Amino acid sequence: MLDFRRAAAHTAQLMTAQVKICGLTTPDAIDAAAGAGAVYGGLVFHPKSPRFVALDEARALAERMRGRLISVALITDMDDAGIAALVKTVAPEFLQLHGSETVQRTAEIRARFGLPVIKALPVGEAADLAGAADYEKVADMLMFDARPPKGAERPGGHGAAFDWKILSDRSFRKPWFLAGGLEPENVARAIMLSGAELVDVSSGVESATGVKDSARILAFINATRFHASLSQQSA
Image 1 (cartoon, rainbow, N blue to C red):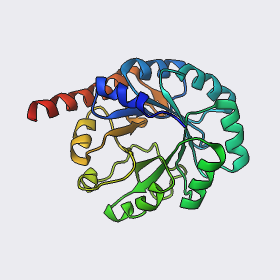
Image 2: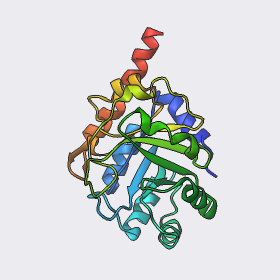
Image 3: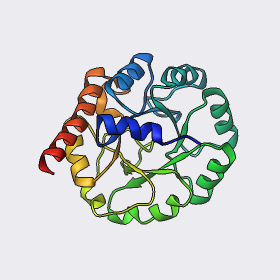
């Protein structure tokens, strides 16, 4: 299993919230994320996503991340054969389950493939957090992402947000990411309202759908650093 101390040490030096840049599709985007101080880099394997990468392409991208970003493979309700091929070809450090995987299925994937798992849960209101306790028993980390619009063909990457304040008084046993609608202009406020220690962004750092923008990546991470400085001043 991955040693989480690597990410923790990086965070202590740079920011309060660890940053995951998801939907990376080019070497330049990886370089921008790593250079700006992101901790995690996400590769998307949902075929209907504009950020989808094929296995051979993903293998090269994951190699570019190695030692610079913790590589995360985002999958949605993928079968064992698909996961096995992905793990063998890409060798990600985390699997992010972003579909309708049950608690049992989450546990099976973690046990079968020997990789730490992030389970994403769609959130629209406080009641949607009720299932988190069961997933905490089987996943290494959670992600609270905005519930996708009705009729959407993919579970994330829509730029939608939910009321971050519903997380502010919650306590979870496992580390968790805040996701959905985050961008350089609002991430500091999102961290302050939710108490998030990890944040995930995709469309919020793009210049066009699926196209990562190095300036926005840097601005996003700088915004989390700005939040850190505000917290220290008010302490």
